[in-house]
Image (cartoon, rainbow, N blue to C red):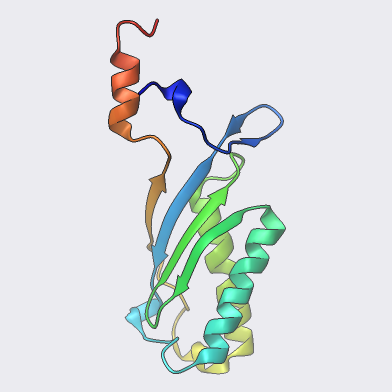
Length: 138
């Protein structure tokens, strides 16, 4: 299979064409189960994540707010790094949730500094390597 045969819905930008999607996972400080038994907090967190994505022009593909962690699959633009994407979601949600739910102020911060990221794509790394190394592609 050649790369040209792979169809995808690339997004057009001023000087680029592409698709950047990342799977993100992060946890609350001290791995507290802050969303367990607190549906209003969970729903507000989801609402905040969607507002961040809308403001930035990003697309949330999948979102799960579990009792003690968050999974987010987001399509973002080439003008932001993965670290900036994470900072946007974690920063706004922490600020607003701690203001609206004072019980969260017992924690030193809502989220830990760390996060997991995994970029995703339509073509595997192995397929790209095969295509680049194919002597007939030049």
